[in-house]
Length: 168
Image 1 (cartoon, rainbow, N blue to C red):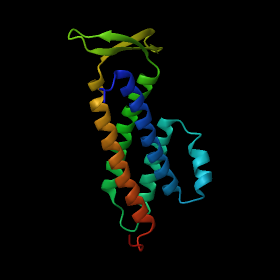
Image 2 (tube, helix red, strand yellow):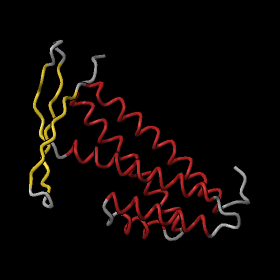
Image 3 (cartoon, helix red, strand yellow):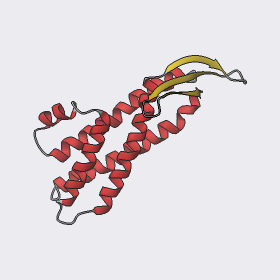
């Protein structure tokens, strides 16, 4: 098997990120405790950052309504939503950038990512540039994997809170 290219890693990141979005959607559906399809319709109308804020508020409210509120869960979930917001920014940067092939000094093939953003308040256009070899995505994948695992822990907590008398 050949080693993945930077092109491959970008695609893998984008697809893997979709799993994070699906996990957030699943938590929102559980927290709503209503008609799943109606909730999914409403959730799909929210942009990613709004889904994170909505999930954060809904979980906090849900915890507050429990007989024995787990206040640390609210803090942990809020921290996770903030981290997911940062990952969402990374995803947007990757999706909306321009790429050119690049060889580093060792001859390894990579990409140069360029992205420009308008900063209206400052009256300037900022241009970011990043050199990407395939291994440059390892930290991104680790953060996505960690986030997915933590989302699953929260999904299971919500299920336990909803159905405390049901044994697995």
